[in-house]
Image 1 (cartoon, rainbow, N blue to C red):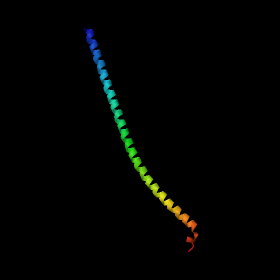
Image 2: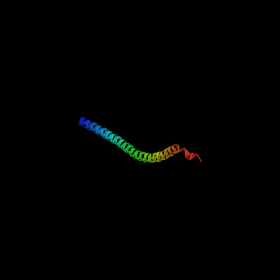
Image 3: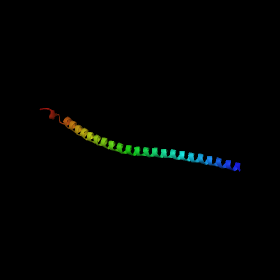
Image 4: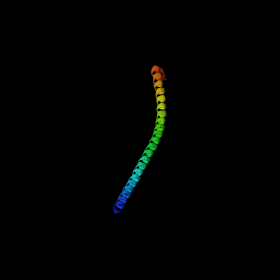
Length: 87
C-alpha cells in the first residue's frame, strides 16, 4: 500500500507541473495576443495618419502645379509678345 500512495503523490506532482505549465502557456499566449492587438491598432492608426498626411501633401502639390502652369503661361505669353515689356 505504501507503493500505491507513492504513485499517487507522483501523479499529483505531475498534474501540478502540468497545470503550472498550462498557466504559463496561457499567460504567454495572452501576452502575444495583447502585443499583436497593439501592433494591429498601431498599424491602423499609422495608416489613417499616413493617408491624411498624403492627402494634405497631394493638395499642396496640386496647388503648386496650378501655380507653375500659370507662371509657364505668363512666361510663354511674355515671350510671344515682347512688346509688353516696352513702355
